[in-house]
Length: 377
Image (cartoon, rainbow, N blue to C red; front, side):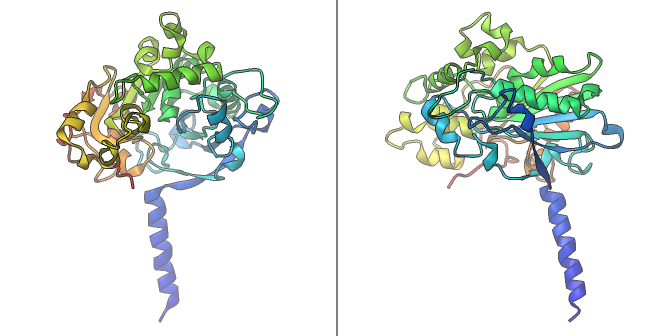
């Protein structure tokens, strides 16, 4: 047997898998941010992954912020310091770029040759916190806004200050951060630059849970209080509403001036599990099977979940999902989700380049057969 032929076949298969599943980009730590106080919850330096642009994309920048929920008090924030969501010391040293971060025109035609950056999330406040005092015992730092600015300063120095085009984006808690910091990001770049923002699964709704309680409103209020976030939330919101409400996009997004695209699943998997039917509101486990697999939801539960889609929605598909821009299977693939016969990648690209506006909200579940619905074990 000629093993060299088998070796070549294996290499080709691995290269094919790599092209489909993305490619790994090493981590970069910003050590000098520590002296400025721009640190993770445990005091470790902020981190990001950077793949340099090329050709026509050399002066174009795509920023994508990682998600990971929040911590809303001293106890939960201290617990996060023991994980990658609170310490850069515990982050993986390589991050797979795929979907909107892919470097291949076939899988990411509008942004593949841009400078693409993945910002890691370790502050627990959607990059809004700033408390000077540090607990002397627990040594927990609430510095999300400083951390964000430290990363921005690093990227500006790397060439982003000369950006001609930029898309500021994020997923989940990072998608919320993309809304809250959207105008601040725009202000950092040249006035001549084309700048827009994309929030993927970041439109968290201030809704009552199945027991009638305002569970998520209290969680967000505690986040704002614990992290000292009020002063870093959009002034257009805090001047009109209680600052504790301005962590919610339904209030904060109204005053955002920079063009904003909202990508959300109408049946957002995280929001259903944690806002609509959190364990504290579902003590008898009535929603257990439905939260794990949307196909197991009753008609009554589906009606409860549907509610009203956010009015600022541009691409709201009726999928049971959470974050769709960072994975190839939902961003651009032969079997990717479709809304109005359009993939997410094309809708975002057309909107960004002003080729065609996209403001579509899907019909109720289960009409959309193109969804990649999540199933939780």
